[in-house]
Image 1 (cartoon, rainbow, N blue to C red):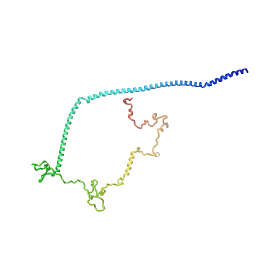
Image 2: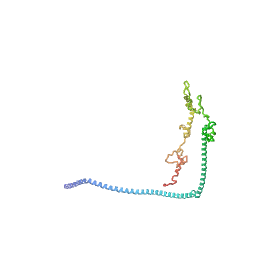
Image 3: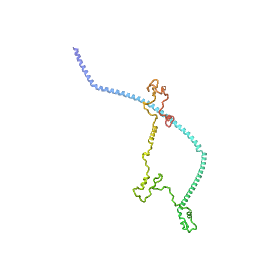
Image 4: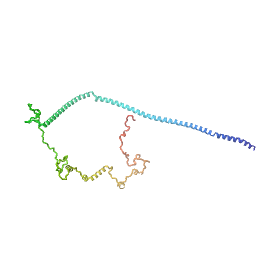
Length: 353
C-alpha cells in the first residue's frame, strides 16, 4: 500500500512532464515541419541543379561531337568543290592557252598572211577596175537609152501637136499663120504641118452592144446599160415604168431550197458520217457483250503455276522466280526511256560536283 502510494506520487510528475513535452512538441511541430520542408527543398534543388548541370555537360559534349562531325563533313564537301573548281579553272586556263596558240598560228598563216593579203589586194584592184568600166558602160548605155526615150517622146508630142493643128496649114488661096508672106521661104513649122497626116475624124465603133428594148433575153456576160433610153411620151394604158420593167427583166435567179439541194445529199452525208466515225474510233473490232462472246477463256498468270494460287507480296515475285511464269521477258515500261537522263553526271560544268 505504501509502495503504491509512493509510486502514485512519483507517476504524477512523470505524467505532467509527458504532457508538458507533448505540448511543447505540438507547439514546435509546425516550425519543425517547415524546417524539414526547407531542408528537403534545398536538397532536392541541389540534386536537380547537379543533374541539370550533368545533362547540360552531356548535351554540350554531344553537340560538340555532332557539330564537329557536320563541320568536317561540310568542310570535306567544300574542299572537294574548291579542288574541283581549281582543277576546272586550271583546265580552262590550259584550254585557253592552247586555243590562243592555235588561233594565233591560224590567223598568222591563213588570215593575216602578208603575201596572200598582197595578192588579194592586187586582185581586188583589178576587179574594182573591171567593175568601174562595167558601171561606166552601163551608165553610158542608160544615158543613151534615156536620151532616145526623151527624143522619141518629143517626136511623138510634136507629131500629136502637128496632127492636132493641121488645119492651120497654108492653102493655095489663104496662107497659114506659120507661113509669112514676108519670108523668102516657108518656115519649119509650115513644112512639118504640110508633111504630117491629120487626125481621122471618123469615129470608130467601140465594140459594145447597143441597147435593144425589144430584146426578149440578154446574155449575162453582156454589160447592162445604166438606164433605159429616155421615152418621149409614155405609152397609153396601164403599163409600168420602163426602169421597173428592166429591173424585173434583169432580176437575179433565186432558186428554191429543193432546187439548190442535191438529190443525193442525204446519202452523201451518211457516207461522210461513216468515214468520220471510222477515222475517230480507236479500235476496229466492234464491242460485244460478255454473254455473246465466242472465244476461249484465257486463264490468269497465277492460275497456271504448279502450286496453285500464290498471294502477292508474301513469298515469291516475278523477278526472283522467273521460271515459274510463262513469260521470261522483263516487264516493259509504258513509255520509252529519255536519252538525256542517261547523260546525267557524265559531264561537268562550272561550280558543280
